[in-house]
Length: 451
Image (cartoon, rainbow, N blue to C red):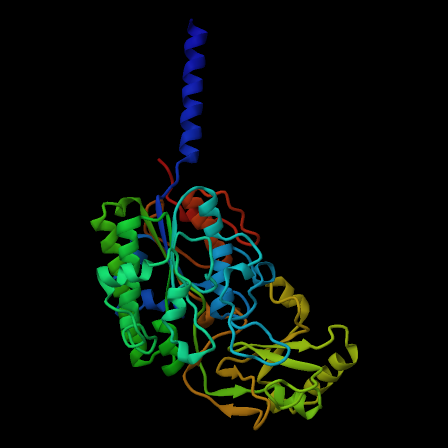
């Protein structure tokens, strides 16, 4: 009888341990990406962001998040949702390289993503997801989805493509009746801060009414105004204030719905920002060598630089064209030192280490203050103002931020640095998802330790 009793106790403990392992640390994870998010927004007193600062103080915050290359929006957001570098997930830039000339098309469709996403894992687990204005989310396996998308036909408008691609049909109209008012290009426009209010209201409505287990939200104002005015522009201050207000709306919705204690907020971004004064146009050099034409379709080209923010990637029409590659290298090495000091060549080995587009021969990365331009005529160095990103992520200004607060999160903890690819494994752990990030790793010290 005694042995039977001991066996029952051991079995009970084992069952409880298995149950504890299966129970998620959080029931609702709100993954918010602030485009152009910088750590100093929550570290410095001058920035009007009380919600962000409270969460950073009470939860976990990082001094910086090392991004991917190029450090631009679409590949970065895909790394956030996959835990993989661009070489693995297949979203290499904002706009895909088009051999016959750039049409203005972006990577909009989630079907272009080549690795598993957190959205996939949530659906596989039987949980619910929501997403608002997230890059590369058209057609994503998301229960409540208003994707970021537009068309090349400007007469079609910016709102209608979102209506055409929403899930379920009628979701946007439902929210317009309930909280938003009629959406149009006046009250949902990146030029104005009311866009952030409406994104926050949409997220709050969906959280309150449908309580998804994972919600991904993209807020853009800080990116827009840093491009326009640089890192410390007046509108950047009002933009982070508007974003903080939008996040407050979502926090309020969690509290009103009685789920705040079961909810985790992860606030991060895609890249930092650098003030610029000039732009380098490396395609001018290729035109001089008759390797491409100064035309929109590049003419009968053999080599061209595909630019993305502050990055330029050498594309060869024939990847095995050693003669053309040698000619490009010779041209670069023959430049006057006054021009060569403006950039460095990033070779294929270094590009492989950070998981960049495998089709690239090499890349040019400018010094801070210089952007890259796709222009193929005029002066090779042109004036430019405002700010940009896209740089190789090896210095602090181009790093983004990270805050985690709420259910399952350690308290009052500061960490030095994580990688952008490390955030997806963290989300998966909180929700107890069956998900394996190809390149990211889970840092368990970010999580609240059980007593």
